[in-house]
Image 1 (tube, rainbow, N blue to C red):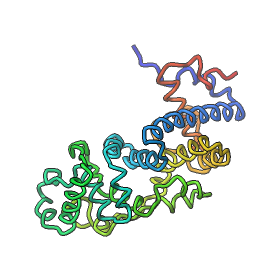
Image 2: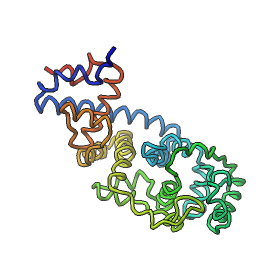
Image 3: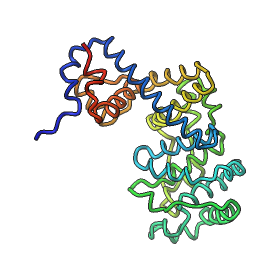
Length: 303
């Protein structure tokens, strides 16, 4: 039996849609997605003892997985002792010691055999290890299984970038709210890692030319998946309609995401011109197409 096209019921209706009908449908879908994200973030906020910055950090950590190691970053963030970090967030070595230690990446077993000798002899690795042993005892820290960081992408530089963001005070809902442009948000979250990670991809690893800045597309992913939903949710809880409007406006300013869902819709004549459109189409796919809710689908029932 031939597999049904994921958008089959929409194929006949899409050519009949005028621009206004399509825009209205996408707006409805975007509103649904924003509200669903807000509901999930409210639960995260409550689970963090109603501390916005802790919730922001955990959501940001998952986004730093960039779709490859999102689950591992989420687990890592859930294990981090935010109290310990709060007492040492002015010291980059201590932040990195906690970050890498609780990620399980200071254990000798986590280091590839061909890098191990250089890592164990290195001053930087040993400095972090000493710091972590002290902080682990002081705060009763628990690390995750380093095997959770599977795949070809090593997380070290991304973890180091997050350490820089925390040390600079950038993981702050107030600082996000103060921004008024995408450029300002890019600048806020452009995290250049500490010196060691500008020349290594993991402990003891061969020196590289440099890690460079995060690309605008990567920053946009962080903004779409973390900054915008947090800003909207924060504004809603504070009854600040201006922040909610600002969050929605950002989505219309950022370029569309590029993934398999968006490309499949483009093949069917629905092209996303902004992140607002791509988020709406992701909502359509996830909430309607994959759940076979065709009778409720905004596009399938136009006209």
